[in-house]
Picture (cartoon, one colour):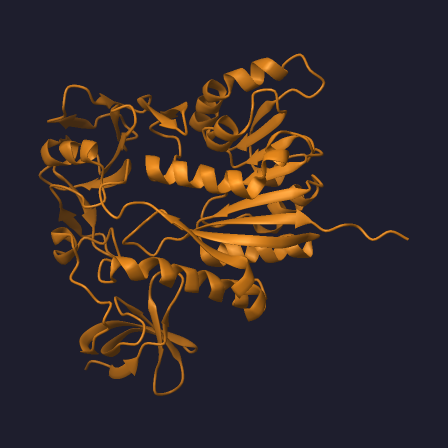
Length: 414
């Protein structure tokens, strides 16, 4: 027997679900609903304090509900979870989610949030992704998984995928591997494929002649005029447009004075292939890049070669540190740039960054709640939050990117 209720959606929440309240007062999270809608739902998960549900019927649809623009989403592809929400409502919804996270998790007042949170830029809503991780179907064709499922949906193209990648998707056939990563350089036209096959038996056919294949394959991307090497196993932003927008937003947040090294060394924590250090810092500025990924560190050594060379014989040489920020021994710095994974910094990493005594910290977060938690920790560590800029680097999805800037509070003098 189905457990069905009729509810009115209060708001959309971090992670992409909509939130409503059941007759017994519990919160229920609903996939695919929109703020203000009345829906009939079936409870799929019942907990003491909350429930999860799926929509049985939309009783009163939002004016912002649209038919998914991608036919594969209609067929069940779970890659773009917000295609039912009009594109012009996605950024305002993300800004509201960030504000709620700051209120609930960072314990910042409503009035302060209104003054602190700013809407930043967005990338185009189609053909922007230059990296796609895809599943391999039984017949060797490529596709994506259904939402919250291991079931696969075949796709001959991807609405948000760059045209250079859609050419690969249309013809590629893979064997002896469950997943592949496709990557291209939008500014260079280079393309590569990595087969996620630990035993090395994977094969892929039907590729254009220019596509490189393998764990050592790489592409180059030019971001704000700087050419970066990116191996297939290295993390990079979702697209060329996202990288450029993020770099310019971080540049504004960090300030020219801090980026010039005027206040001291720059720490690029979770620095990846050196995106920020290579594009924002002059080679003579002493820099410490911290990164756990072996391939990203290899890329960073190439991308920051001039930085390493120019400071090599100085009292403050630049360096690339392979390891966790949590185990790093802090050094004095003037500026910290931090771009952690979705889980955020956490208390240990925050303590290390605070120990640098940097005058300014710029935090890039890709999860609203984790970002708000980190901001609370940094505020408690002696920093004042100046601004939070919300970016939409992943249209048609609930993924949110924020760039927050904090300034060290002046120490009281006796």
